[in-house]
Amino acid sequence: MTQIVIIGAGECGARAAFALREKGFAGKIMFIGAEDHLPYERPPLSKDALLQGHAPKLVSEAERYEAAGITVLTGISAESIDPAAKVVRLSDGRSQPYDQLLLTTGARPRPFPGLSGACQRIRTLRTHGDAVAIRAALQPGRHLAIIGGGFIGLELAAAARKLGARVTLVEGLPRILSRGVPEELAAVVAERHKAEGVEIHCGAKIRSLQEDSEGVSVLFEDDSTLDADLIVVGIGAIPNVELARDAGLAIDNGIAVDTHLRTSAPDIFAAGDCCSFPLAHYAGRRLRLEAWRNAQEQGQLAAANLLGAGEAITAVPWFWSDQYDLTLQIAGIADGAAQTVRREVADGAFILFHLDAGGRLIAASGIGPGNTVARDIRLAEMMIAAGIHPDPAALAAPAIKLKTLLAA
Amino acid sequence: MSNWVEVCATGEIDEEDVIRFDHDGKTFAVYRSPDDRFFATDGLCTHEKVHLADGLVMDDIIECPKHNGRFSYMTGEAKGAPVCVDLKTYPVKVEDGSVFISLG
Image (cartoon, rainbow over all chains, first blue to last red; front, side):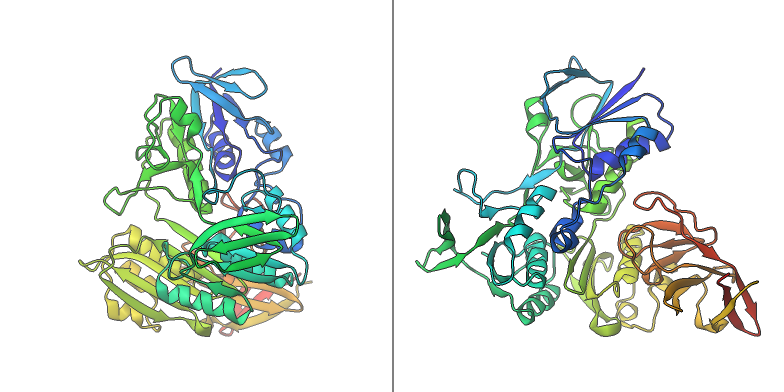
């Protein structure tokens, strides 16, 4: 019987496993993950889970895997792949043969440079266990220092303020959210955090982070220090490529896959946070995308292609962040925009449309309370995928429905 | 016996669009299809309780604004990940230029 093995039990792998069944695959599916939990949703970890401290929200309940005939091994990692023999060696000593292999190994937090050993009060946030440990340390009046003004750090800052902790956020670059978020939106986010009592220091030059029996400190190059009860480092993620690299697969800022999510080895695919792929709509530029929807979509696409569908990646990058009652959503890649058009939406929300030199819509980014920008960002995403060259004046006019521009 | 509740005038919902309707402590989503028929479902996505009326209507599909879960608003059927639980639907009628939904 044909056997498909999936390594890495997160959102992406789970979607792939179920999609294989939905598409009619009748062989064996073995799904292997190093964490002790069944795959769970990671987006809440820096938001609701932190506030409420509840159990992880599973992507699917155990009964659904059972009903679909998916064998899930938790708490077991893959140690090596032999692509010639088509065997994976697992941490419990067994050798697991495969006909086809899917790598959904994800990413891990980038550690702070020079920080060694296991620190109790200098942490990162990626897993449910991380969220539980951070929440336990965030009592009212405690001081949390966050290193990095990206989505993880900012969402954590918002959650920590709601829990009553004092929060200082330290960013090395001149502004927060400099990777992928336009300055106009980042300014709204920064203002909101300041209004909620978060201290933000940009352009900070950190010399080191220290932990001793008294607490933790951030030491700056100008010899100043910042004392705290807990430091959380949120300075990006590193793709988990070691397994693939050691098996001789091509690596290029992630496990390199082609437009069908195939790696350089026969019968091995990769998807989600761990892989870099040629991006449609942007001249095939190679990108690695650490985003929830990408994990879902690539998991489903990998399943289709494991079964020989030969479907190419066509998705437009899309992601969101929730902080306080604000939601930010971005579709597309704004790099290289020649023109930006602002559209006012209700309740102080706004959307920026980014057009290239030829007038093609390449990205849209919006921010507002709740889901005020969601519908228009979704329409913008469809316009980007369709390669539309919208009239900038129409984009800026709130009275003109975006749907009419999509049809044009 | 049906309990018909008036939602709004038909003209208050655009074709291929949706509005939110709150009644008696519950929230609903009321739709007008591209072929000018009206439908109603529970107002919150079955995945994470997000108001579907902020989402996008495309043909017979409502897409959740938060995580893109899709449902047929005509039948309530969940169309795949991340949504797996169907939406409850409600009978709708149009009388004298107004939309009514039946709350049983």
